[in-house]
Image 1 (cartoon, rainbow, N blue to C red):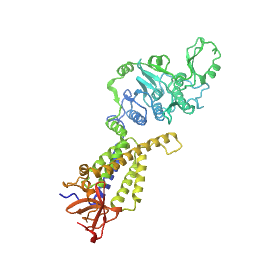
Image 2: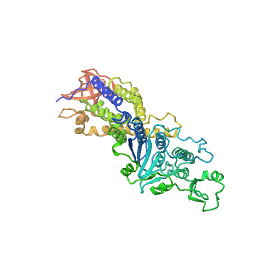
Image 3: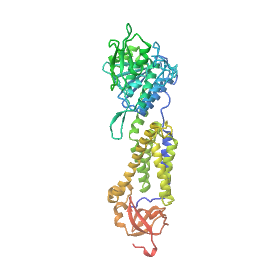
Image 4: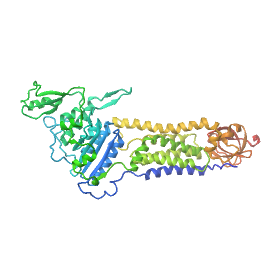
Length: 543
């Protein structure tokens, strides 16, 4: 039987069409839009939204929380319960989530904001802000912790109006750490810790949480003092505030251990159990579980709107974990389509993997029109170089650079500003380069595997080229055909089909040259599932 002929213009059009399909899939991929169905109109103010944050605090968690809070506002919810179960995560995204929660709701009723540092100023020197940054019509924000809210999780919890914990839960330990190049974990320098302390001071001012214990959750190098004025109530003062506080309260004797004692010393971060947190005023109350919390708050379970991720959001988040492999496979399959004759099965599979990749990245605000344009342009340039107009690799190099840039940008969050000096941008760019490089490594590794394996694997080669010739394909007979001569069945531009004896073989012209139909050719090599031929004089042709 004859193999399917390889018509370069048709294959070029099919290749470019598949690349265009990837772009259309990306532009048509849905993002999270608006509140859940049925909540577009303002709901009664007694309705409650349920949000759950579990696992590592990262960009996906931050984006999900922002979406959930936007849905809550759009639905006119009166209360949002945020169920936390996390050991922490990335400080940059924890700060974003802290700010989102702090700005989500109005100042709590019945609770006066705690005083700032003595003198009425925060650590940044700004006067007390109260709840000016909060939404006056926003929901009542309630955090529930049934296991742990540590580090970044605790910081997010204290942006809420109220916090409820189970007796066995733990909250605190907001120490900022980082991993060095050698893998060693160390505490962040004072410059970074100061930023976190300032955020917690804002939570104390705007939400009314006790300032001293809250700052001690991150102030590792400061002591927390328990102070009991004569005839007064016990309070807790952080070391930075103690001198000014004592100056304002001359009745307190600093040397009397019955009045002033170290509650937590240096090199210790405050972490509390549920009962300890309630006793220190660091939690609103205890609740055995969510149903018990709803009962305690007088919430009707039927009035709860579930704001957890939907199917599309969960799918996009899962696909994001394997996104480099999806991109790499799409590029590799497009390479198959360029280098093997067939019916377009590889282009179709490439479109499937590419669409999954673009859906995940576009849905998660990682890919927009510019990145898609770069990827499509890179593929188009390479296709033109290989199939239509060889220019000594000029188009191929340009296409490779476009692919590299598009691959890196496809993993770079769109919300980041292009500021090379910003550490957050530097970290994100490094991660994006790693993931983009991994995608290209998958594609490149697949190509190398083809180069080394396929010329020696006739059966596998036969499947990949989808050739119907039972007697053998160019992959199996290729090495034995080196030195044989035949003729170009059709125009080689530079790829096409040659006839050697009675067999038809997929082939491409050496050095990207074009060979007219009917011209005699000589086989000089067998690579990547096809013969490599060059034109010869008619007098040199052998059978």
